Image: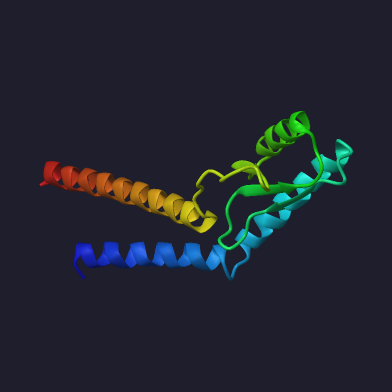
Length: 139
């Protein structure tokens, strides 16, 4: 097997494993449930039970959609506090204009997996160069 085939198989396996972990493995759903629970807890702590919050689905994005009665100051503060929670990229109020574009969580996970795969390939290449240099010195 040549080097390019091995890299293509490794790349495909990395992307397939990421998809399986995120989708059927349930990692995306667990993150969505965790974020929903954390935002609800934060809103309850600030006695804002009338405000609804949910993470955006289809596709799953780390954006929380807020809805409910609140004045301008409350909207800004609730959005700021929501964005400070782990796992939340942005918070958007329903009816407040077009939300910013965000990358789907699956795409984020695949980019991180590809970066890790690339780092592994570079480290393997450096190890192979070191082994070849050591063999050349001994020969």
